[in-house]
Image (cartoon, rainbow, N blue to C red; front, side):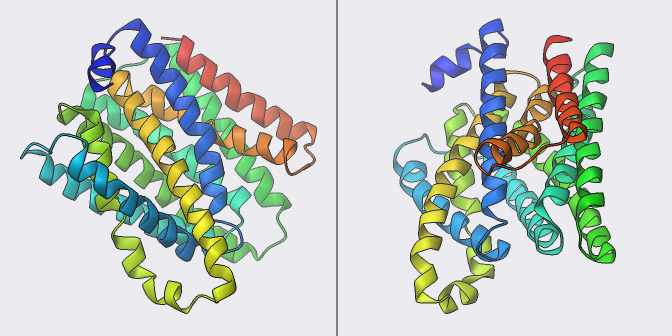
Length: 299
């Protein structure tokens, strides 16, 4: 499968596959984010998910994929540091603010910074219509965050802190997207990067919350284990999809398409949670979809 994927790099078929993978990542990421803002404390939920996907990655890293080349070890170290910072910021943001406010800010900041970073690191360039699409999508995302902020009945001081943390989290999203795209391109087999990344990435959060996990009420352990297992599978497909998309095509385009996760999160709320959506939110969601279409087909 690795040889087939590599053969698609830089081709029209590879571009189409990258688009499909980025959209898949968006759908899955919408669900993954919600899993950390539910029954369990965000720190505990993230620690359990990371422990699960780290353990699941061990046999693949050691016995299935090719061993990493020597130059990959500093890259894994860099990815470990960046992702750890991202998780700390995200857990803090989710602890402070409402998910419907925090999530759009995180996902809106990430693609804007990533587009500029990809231009510097990978020399990517975009047409006028694509830039208009980026701005349209981000306007929809931040507009949705502002709307939810105004409608949320929580302490405004705490919400402002949450928005600040969400903005920093978005910057860290751009940092790991760009850095990981460099990493997955630096190894001959993309699945080597993914397997070893997940194995290393599953270390820090379980260590940080191990006391909370040990003290967890016995009645909560099985539900948490189920959530961790499902979350691990979602993480594999979500992160794996976006990373493969960045290898096959432009990093910036993949990052923008992934942030339609905000749109999918809203749609999930409508279809499955029976949430009501007024004309303003509908218009903002339409902006997100329009911006993604402009970016993808404006090149």
